[in-house]
Every structure is written in structure tokens, then in C-alpha cells.
Length: 259
Length: 273
Image (cartoon, rainbow over all chains, first blue to last red; front, side, top):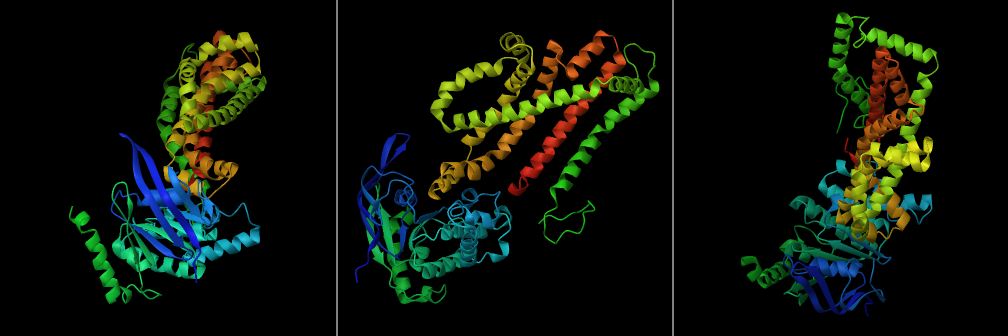
């Protein structure tokens, strides 16, 4: 069975303006992400993980090479993709209730009944039914991030692009959102590109981990995670394979951790 | 979650927000508390003042003078004319200020082009505009409106510009990645996000609009509170002058309170009041 790629990068180069002049962030990067895959982009701080994700989301333009989504060159945000930002407090509209925030991406395009049903479904998937009519600023950080995820889900994306979505949350909230995300992905079958600097999070969630390294960044390694699904915060993290991958990845980042 | 503590609110469902009207009532009450020293002073004046004084007639004579003016049919139309000019000018200044300010905030190139010109116009004192406007437009309501808008425009414009510049980059990117159209982005994201800045601008612009409206009326003797005030002064009617001053003061006070109530209602969903 051949898996049709959802994302494809060919010799992708990205330059960003900086104070001393233009800086090359990503150089000659080749990448292929199959449909329905959960791929984590892992790397140290400042390696260009977010830049790569933003280029694939059409929010940052690349200088040369190709960034392709479902056979289409990405130059600006493309239908079928939804982005989840780390900074939920600024990504949500604080004057709209949870329900109307979730509806934001789809409300112009659907009839009322259909809209309600999609919004309800997205809110159910993140478990916020009780807070449908509450304002986001009244909710905890974890709940606000769930609102943002629900807003992306309401658009029924075939690809979900997430930029360190759990980076600002405490450990317990993070674990519960990880499990929720895995359940959502199992239900929707969406391709997920997940940027993180958390090694254990990357192993726990992914099918494949892409290791970014260097400046300009390139893919240092591509690691396949062969852990059974559904995953479990306790059982999965005690499997020998999990521990082996954890060892391998910490080893790979050893000099960065000790630096 | 907020619950009614001292206000005898009708039993609202647990965990529900108090209706905005209670916030407005709170605002009015705290404003009235602030008026207590003034009321005490007026009472003192009334008790110690001499009702035959040509310069400092006590408050009871002001009331008499105002009742006279009301009965002669001058006061109410004058208040209405001034109110109408101020309200129309504020609406116009807000629309223009938000439009121009929004464009300047969004485009650094436009900011560079228009910046010095606007800076020059902004520093012109509004009274100096009156003669110019009277020459070009003539002494009519349009001229008055123009002069008031000219004065009231800047606070709204500058606040909107600053508001646009301080919109969070993540909000702009979220709008882009949701692939909303231009109109949807404006009405659903940018205008609500800018509302606090815009309303702050309007709050600053309102007193300016009143000042310039009265000024224009006094300088041109066009109908309105300003003209009435000037006529009373020319007739050496001190009681009427003081009475009209009270009317002007209350006028500003009520307008400001109304804007404050509107602001707390409009910003309620944002959790900023």
C-alpha cells in the first residue's frame, strides 16, 4: 500500500530578515509526510521548527524550493489546513463565547443547522460542552487551548498544524490534552504536524519524529515510532521501546542539553 | 465568577453575569458621590450669598433666570441644537477617525506620507479654524459641524492608529490562517479588537466637541447654548450666565456618563469593565 503524501518539501530554503541582515533559517530541506500521519518536528530552541511549520501553513514564504500540500504549492493559507497557535490568549477572540469562537472559521460558509451541528461536534471532541456559552477569558489556560483546537476542528481540516500547542500548560493539563489530541486524531484521521521541544511529548504522540538541527537547519534524523495505539500515559511510557527512543533522542540532544 | 454583593439585584441564575444596567447604575452613583462637594458649595453660596449682588447672585436666582429663559422658548431649542451638533460631529469624527486612523496604523508608508500634514493640522487650535471655515463655508450648520469634527477627530484617529499598531501578531495570523475574507476580518476581528481604543478616543473627543461647539456658537452667534451664554453676558445678566454655565456643565456631565455607560456595555463581553 502506498501512502499518498499530504505534505512535501523539496530543497526548501527559508530566509528571514534579522537585524544584521537576512538569515537563512532552513536550507535544502526534503520532507514527505503521509496522509493521516502524526509527525512531530523536534529541535532545540531557535532551530527553525516553527518557521518550517509556518512555511507549510502558508504564513511565511520560502525563498526557494517547493512546499507542497496535497499537490498544491503553498504560498498562502490553503483550505483544508487549520493552524493552532501556542499563544491561545491572543489567537482567540475574547469578546466571543466559546461557541462563537469555534464557529469563526466556518460561520460564513454553512447554513445554520449544519453550522450548529459542526460546532457542537467540535466542542464535544475537546470536552467543553459545559462551557459553550462562556467567554474564553473566564476559562483556564488548558480550556482556552481546547477552544482553539475546537475552532480548528470545526473547519474539518485534513491537516492540523500545531505550533507548540501545549508549551504554555502545566504537566497535568498537558498530559490530558495529549490524550485528547490522540483521540481526536483517531476520530478524524487528520494529518498532524506538531512542533515541540519536548522529547517525551514527541515520542508519546507521533508516528514519525523529524529532528531539526544546525543553523541553517536541516533534518538530522527521521525516527519512526513503533508504539502500539491507543497510547496510555502510564503503560506506553513504561514500554522498553519508549524508553529506547527516549534514550536515543536525549543522546542526540546531549550536547545541546549540556550546553 | 462575579456575584452581586451590595446591589439588590433581582435573583439572577447562579454564576450569571450581573446585567450591564447595574454597572451603569454603579457608575452614576459613584459620579453623584463625586458631586457632593460641589452641591455643598452651592448650598453654602445660597445661604451666604446676597440675592441683589450684580456679580455673584446665589443659585436660587440662577434657577429663576433659567425658568424665564425656558418660558421665553429660548433654552430648550438652544440645548437641542448644541446637542445635535455635538452628537452629529462625534459620529462623523468617529467614522473618519477610525477609517483614517485604521489605514495609517496598517500602512507604515501611508503613515510616513500623511504624518507631517496631520501633525500640522492637529496642532492648529480649533478657534483659529472658525474664521477660516466661516470664510470658505459661510456661517451655517455645515461650518459648525466642520469645526467640531476638526477638533474631535484627532483623539479618535490617534487612538485607532495606536490600537491597530498594538494588535497582537498572533491575532493577525489567526485571522489569516482562518482564511476569512476582507469584510469578515474587519467586522469580526479588527473592529471588535479595536473597540476599546476607539471608545477611549471618543471619550477624549466628547468634551472637545462640546467646547468647540460652544466656541463656534459664541464666535458666530449661531443658535445654541454658546450664543445664549454670550447674549446673557452682554445683557449683564449674571444670574443667567451662572445658570447657563450650570446647564453647560450638566450637559457635559450627562454626555460623559452616557458614553461611560455605553463603553461598559460594549466592552462587557471582552471582560474589560
